[in-house]
Image (tube, rainbow over the protein chains, first blue to last red):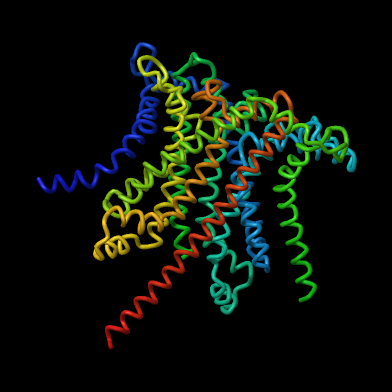
Amino acid sequence: MSRLKTLAMNWIPLLPFLILCLAIMILPLFFMLRGSFTGSNGEFTLEHYAKMRAPIYAVSFKNSILLSGLTAILGVILGTVIGYFIFQLISKRSKELMTALCDVTSNFSGAPLAFAFIIVLGSNGVLTLALQKYLSWEIYPTFSIYSFWGLVLAYTYFQLPLMVLLIIPAIAGLKREWREAAYGMGANSHQYWRYVGIPVLTPAILSGLLLLFANSFGAFATAYTLTEFRYPLVTLQLGFLLTGEVFRDPGAGDAMGILTLIMMGISILFYQLAARRGRKWQQ
Amino acid sequence: MAAMKKKYSFLTGIVIGSFLFYMLLPIVATYVFSIATRWDRTILPEGLTLEWYKVAFADDWFFIVFKNSLVLSISTVLVSVIIIVPTAYWVHLRNPKARPLFDLISIIPFAIPGVVLALGLIRLYAHPPLMIGRTPAMLVAAYVIFTMPFMYRPVINSLEAVNIRVLTEAAQSLGSSWLRTITQVILPNILPGMLNGGLLVFAIIFGEFTIATFLVGARFKTFPMQLVYFTRRDGRIASAYTVISFTIAWVSSLIILWVVTWGAKRTSMRNTQHTKGLFAGDVVEQK
């Protein structure tokens, strides 16, 4: 009896939180999963997943994966290089200023960021006009901020500083003694990076890749402000199904939602595992 | 050697310079655009004006959407503090066996995009007999879950940083009541974490567009919704809204940075005091 009482005492204060999680997170996702396998007469079906092969859904997934993959790779490569140069800065103050800038800008996303990019690179944008006048370079119509490459540029804006923030602690974890030991044993710079530097940075690079992928795969507001529903992306397609009071094709929405959750879930899970491994070096 | 150093700093200049150009140009351009009379025909603005802010403020909708976003952010922070902070405390101190489960739950929201969360909530709660899916209250509940990692993590971190268990036991063995232990020992120690989490949640929700659009939409218009509306109607007013959004975002980020540094200083100071106190105690006992 008293053991039961202790058990209750341990768990009752956690109930409000657990109930909220259940109501807002677990139940809706469970019903989404169920809905994705339920036909119009309540029978079990795979037809909603089969619909995903239709061009509009298939293209959305292809575009989302391309956009997220490309901006994640760009963010990781450029972020690692920039993080390395920031770390090498001699003045402590400029180092702090650069990390503060990354911290602030990694939070700039969504509608305001998209609109800032329209001001800079829209068809009458500040940079568009400057390039035209000073370099006689007409970027339109080859480039458009409302197209795939425009989205790449806008997404990289919030990916890059996030990667810099992720990689700097890892670079700081590369101990000076390791480098000295490597060089002392006759290693050259190439060998040092090949056998010490890169392997130590690998968990941070991998976790960065996964986090950045998930970060852009789930993004909605930036793409919506730039393209409304014109450019096929998974999140935009889901949003399109949700507009209006009457739900258009709920089964397809459920199936797309579940596929999105699977992709995001795998990325976030492996991100956590890689990040945990990376932290080992940073202590 | 000197030549190498020069080459190295040239490369640094190029890399850092391009990075700064890319990161700062959109922000600076938006601030200037919002006070430019016209800036779509010439390289430099044709003139400066505060007209677009005047036009934005003259519209009643500006205050309605600003107030709505403020109400949503503040309510979310309050509910978060009431539900998540005690949970983090309890899990850390009283029920450590549940800690892995809660750590896992706290990262799930990272894997749920706003639009998917909105889809799930509407499908479950927005048709008869349950018609609560499209209310601001439901939106706040969704926001508390959506931003949970940003509140849970900093609070757990500050609980770990100060060894709250020892402090609680010390306070109680000295005869402190529960209320006094909470208000004078626990709360001051987790304050940096709570402030950090609260500000982060505030900033995220003030700028949140997706869930709000799909859950409540025009019934409860928020600041970002109005911003997006103006990007399609009037770029000048949209730029004023964008500047206000940016300003709120960077001011919150800077306050958070400041709070984090302040919190770290406080705990490290306290830790050194502790060690000092411990050593002093040892010396006294040996005597």
